[in-house]
Length: 73
Image (cartoon, rainbow, N blue to C red; front, side):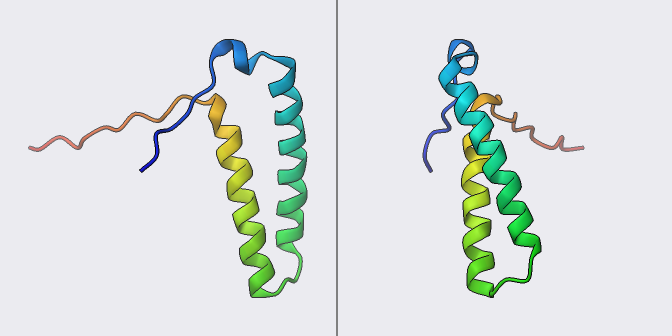
């Protein structure tokens, strides 16, 4: 499994990231709208893959979720 990349505070606040983020959010909204339309199964699969890519890219600015083990009683 590949290592999860996280942007630094400086990178998140950079003008370049802000432009990329705004573009990606617009694309994501458009892809989700297209997904709601009547599509072939192949087109639906492609749209879902594109959505996943944008979601993963936008997650670069979020800290990795903590993995918490269930307590054994």
